[in-house]
Every structure is written in structure tokens, then in C-alpha cells.
Image (cartoon, rainbow, N blue to C red; front, side, top):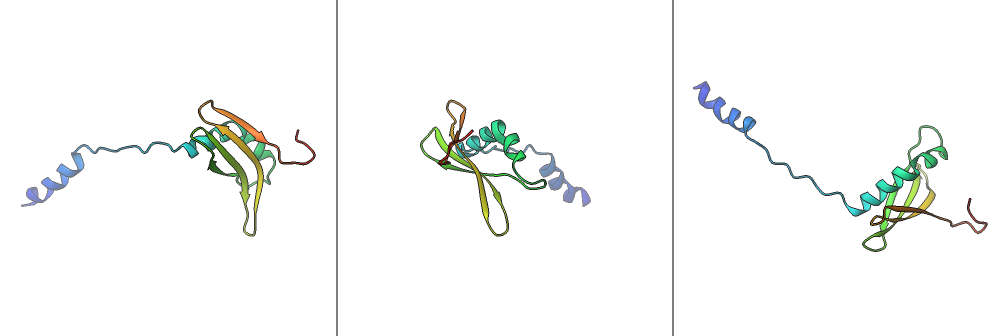
Length: 102
């Protein structure tokens, strides 16, 4: 009797399982490009123990705007904006200062 109860359990455990991977979204690709090229310089600008967060905004099929920010309990501080072309794998900093950027 126990064999009849264990047979379906073993069959389900040993049967092959098909898993489909979700494709990476284009926004995630834009954020990943910024992380690869600019993450070290952004981490130098924040306090130890804090994290840099990223948010991507769609401009067109290849062009995205990504902001790097620190999320605090009372406010959100944006460090830098980036224009990202995922087709050409190009990341460009956006200068928003009236006095120019480095």
C-alpha cells in the first residue's frame, strides 16, 4: 500500500521541469549599464553603509534617462542623471548645474 502512495510522489519529484527565464527589460539594461560604468564613482559620494538606487525613464526604444539617488526616511536625494543609449551601450552624465560640471 505504501508503494502506491509513494509512486506519485516520486514521479512528480523526478519528472523534468521546464522553467522559462524572463527576458531582461530594457529599463533594467539601462540601469545595468550605469552600474557597470558609474557605480564606483557614485558610491564614493555617499556615506558609508548607504545604498545607491537607480530608476530608469523611457525616452525612446534605445534612449533612456537614469537617475541615481539615495532613499532616506524623510527625503530622496538625487545624485546624478544619466542619458543612456542601450543600442550603442553608451552612458553620458547630464549636467544640471548653472555653473558647469567637471
